[in-house]
Structures are given as C-alpha cells and as structure tokens.
Image (cartoon, rainbow, N blue to C red; front, side, top):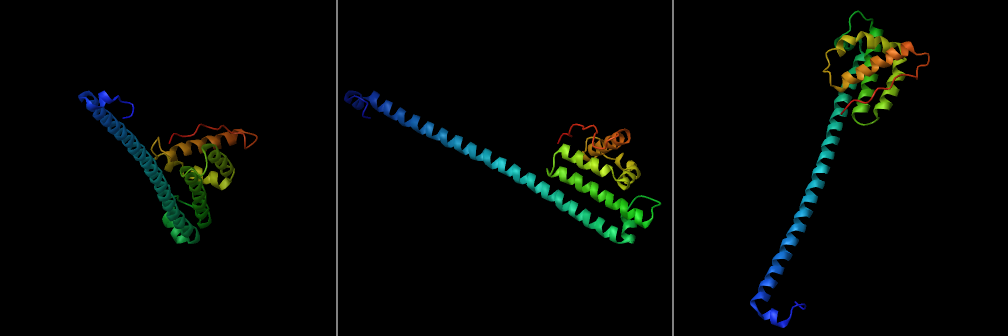
Length: 186
C-alpha cells in the first residue's frame, strides 16, 4: 500500500483497488497451486505407467520361467517330453533336442519382449541360432504351429524374420550377411 496516495487510500476507489488486488493475488496463487497439482498428477501418472510396464515385464518373465521349468523337466524325463511335445515320430533324443531348441528360441524372444535387446540384436542372435542344424530341423517341423499365430503378433513377426534369415542363409555364401528387416511395431 505504500504506492497508493493517501487520498486514494481513504476513498472508496482505494478500497476497491485494494480488494481487487487481494482477489488477483488469490486468483494467481490458486492458479499456481492448480498448475503444481497438475504437474504432480502428470508425474504420478508417468510413474504409474512405468510401474505397470515393469509389472508386465515381471509377469512375462515369471510366465516364461514356469515354461522353462516345464521344458527342463521334459528334457530330463522322456515320459514328460512325450506329453509336452506335439511333434510325431521322433526318437526320445530327437524330441529332447526339439524341446531344447524351442527353449532357446523362447529365451531369445523373451529377451526382446522385456527390452533386453533391440530388434537388430535379436536378429543377430537368431542368425547364429539358425546356423544350428537341429534348430533348422525344429523350425521346419514346427512350421504348421506358426501358421496359427495372429498376423500382427510379435511371434508371427519374429517367425517371418526367422524364415527370411533361413532363406538368406540358404542363398548366402557368408552366414552373417543377411537381410535385416525393420523391427516390428510394439
């Protein structure tokens, strides 16, 4: 109030100006509190989204861990291997090898799904796996299984990438020179 002249301070106009200033201060103070509240809500929603993503990854890892435990038991016990495998006409040894190839492929896909590697790294690891004759045999034997996958699914996209890698490996003189497809959309 030091900036007001004494005549204005005692007049009705002066009290109106003073109360208007008070309202303006309250309005702007409310605005800054409101903005701060919005910022806090945005930050909380970002953190909640991050926690939800981590929980999803943890659930994927847990589900995969259970599957790997089943595969390990089936690999160790031929009677369980027969119960778990859908491939026909395999010897016990060959069935175990196919289950293990499936296990290795599953580990690579999971690594990509939980952001343990990028698309290019996944392709690189799959190129190495595709050099294994048993994996190629497994991949060929399970082609019918992949036809039932939804077109847009990650498994279907990875399956197409493996098919392309195998095709390129059949045609290439050097195994590391293959076509790198673009990564699938999340």
